[in-house]
Image (cartoon, rainbow, N blue to C red; front, side, top):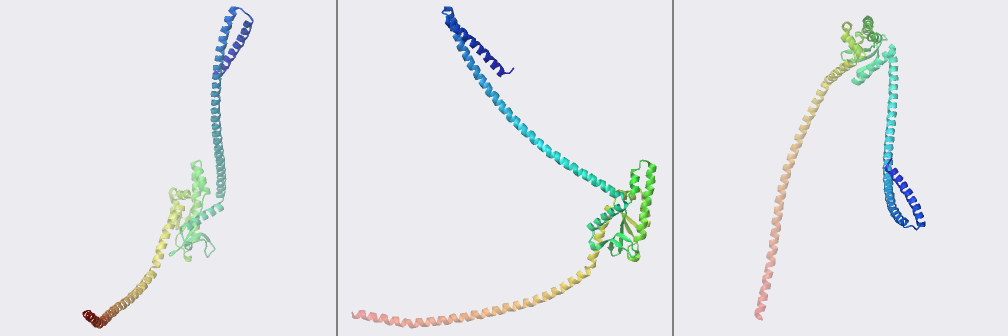
Length: 366
């Protein structure tokens, strides 16, 4: 039972007592017994006390109600804030869920793409086309277009995936993707099965090597004495070079160099540097010839400067002579002007003297 309930209950009790007192007081007023008079006075005092207590309890109840209302208001504000916070969190959670669903959809699409790619790789023809595309992209990224050609056709009709043009001849490059038996070998559960598929894998690779060697190494068509077998998969290349040394020896005997995406990129970088150096050496004579022509022109320009310098020196000498003559002429003009000025002063002076003598004579006569 809380405080508010207790206060209400107390008010009810006091009210009941007050009503009972009122009833008793009214009955006593009807009687004129002195004892009743004393009792009436006591009841009046009790009534006043109860009224005061009632007022106090009402004020307490009012204060308690205001306090409860304030607390309820605070609780409502807190609840509103919490509700708003929860709504915002739920909204953010909804955004996160939508984003996760979107990403899951992207993952599902990616998984579908991977599945499609896996299906593509199951077809030898499509897998070969994919390997050729990888080869073309590497060539395009490292070499200028005039230094290589894709789908190069020889005179006998054979078409090589790509060739590189060098000053020593044409380098044939053909892409081979022997995956069937390689995949069976690495997924085999028993060692006998693994050995079986490895032999088949080695046989596949040797056939590809012999095919490239016989079809594309054609010195009569200005090819080099070696060709490149491009293996688009680093895993397959690693298996051939590291775990199957007999393949590497067989390839060397057939003048075939095997290359993965990484090793082919390094080879093309070196080839590009050599090509640039060769181009520089090829143009060195032209550069030296141009420098010799520049030197001849520089000598001519120097001779013209010497002539111009002499002309300027003569011009300075002529200028000094003219200035000297002008100075002498100016001196003569100044002298002539001075002579003229002195003659005029000599003529004006006798006239002033005669005027002074005449004035003195007049003063004496007076």
